[in-house]
Amino acid sequence: MMPTVQDVCRHVRSKNAGPFWVTFDLFFRNREDFHRYARHPALGPATFERLFGTDPALVKQFPVENLNMVKISCVRPAPSGGREERDMHSGQMFVRLLDVQLD
Amino acid sequence: MGKECDDEVVILVPTGSLGAGAREEELEYGIAQGAQVIATDAGSTDSGAAYLALGISKNNRGAVKRDLTLMMKAASKAGIPIVVGTSGQAGGDLNLEWTRDIAVEVARELGIRPRIALLYSELSKETVKRKNAEGRIRPLAPMGPLDDATIDGCDHIVGAMGPEPFIAALEAGADIVLGGRTTDTAVICCYALMKGAPRGLSWHAGKIGECGGQSTIKTVDAAGLLMRIRRDSFEVEPLNQINTCTPESVSAHMLYENSDPFRLFEPGGVLDVTRSQYEQVTPRTVRVTGSEWEELPYTMKLEGAAAGQYQTLMLVGIQDPIVLNDLETFQAKMTKTLYDRVHSTIGEAAGNFHISLRLYGWNAVSGAQPKAGTPPPPEIGVLFVATADTQDMANQIAKACNPKFFHMYMPAHHEMPSYGFAFTPADIPRGPIYEFKLNHVVECDDPMELVRTEWVDLSLEEAA
Image (tube, rainbow over all chains, first blue to last red):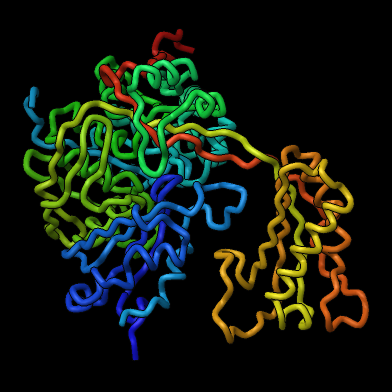
């Protein structure tokens, strides 16, 4: 059975980083999962483009080894507060990552 | 470093944001521990552009007054200064003056006579255009170069100050410094920098402290943080004596609301925590070492906000299983029906309009279709959002849509359904959309170039 993000992370969150960016923090269960998945292609720019409509060229990934986590930041699909805003602080966007499969 | 560093600088951060709820017992503890300054942020861009565009606070006046009262009482008794950044949520001139008036009122009620410095960092459109014409404004991703039309389109523009204007005001004898837009970190670390504390450690402490107790493990509800900055390290401790800091709670805060977990760009440089070390020194306290500061040409980040098109809302609740069993069809049919209705009843006069339906309880938050096989919810709330060039047109569009939004048939309906309106009148004029238009930095000749300092010196008033 292929693991998903929520299988290998003990905590996943998202938050605005200014009005134009959103940042996702994925805290892995342990050091082993961090090394196995932090740079996994399924957590790459293409996934963020597919899920959030963001520009893949501006997706930034920062593995943070001492915290067993990876931070992934991308441009918001639209700046905060626009005509079709649904989540002003981007605090719910992480939910769409939880089921991403890590083969 | 020009100045000899004091052995220890002790900063009390009473709350993550002025008005969020400082606590008297936490202030008392921090001052008993030797706090030399009370520092807090009072806003950010997080809650959207309306607060800058309108010059209004997000927090209510009573909440801000309550926190200021606790802080001013404690600071006055201890004889230490208060510094506040990003006054009134957005740090525009109107936001700053709103906060000034509350501080003056509190001073009179407490019978104290502080010297209050006001740091204005709102910029005129002329100033911004001049700097742009000089080639001294640069875009930050994902924005492109700035043009005059964008500048003219902003209702208010602010530059985010660094610590230098606060230091100048403190050195000039301010008891209270109320800042316009300020970086969250700068207001927390300004006093330490004034005392000659190491810059990397001071800025890092500023970042850890900017959300108050957020970098602590909250066993009990609490607000604030105490930080001791020394020559070779700084220590972080919760003001609440039951709560704790751990290396993880402190280091993880560098991640919060930052797109880069290692480098934080600030006016005049970048904080680099790549080599920072975090160590538990008491059960409640964490020591941080190794944080570095790299000096860069001085810039201030610009924020500009503007009102745009107008919106009108309607809300219905639906429990009818015929609708709930096929929400995808319902949403598609309703959207088409409402657009057709506007075209047939208002026509071209509707102008550049937009209708969005958000099915709360189903997929409103993401807008994406739930996974196949997701069972129907017990009910949904359907939020109708019409957007148009004027409030009147958005209202007219909502009124035109009302009968269909209320009664639209699904194929299985044998008689006309009536969905559950929550209000009468059904349509709610919501006002304009507010958006940030700038994501740029302006290069400054010196940190004070774009800042104006004014004083409200209550010490000059005759004693009552």
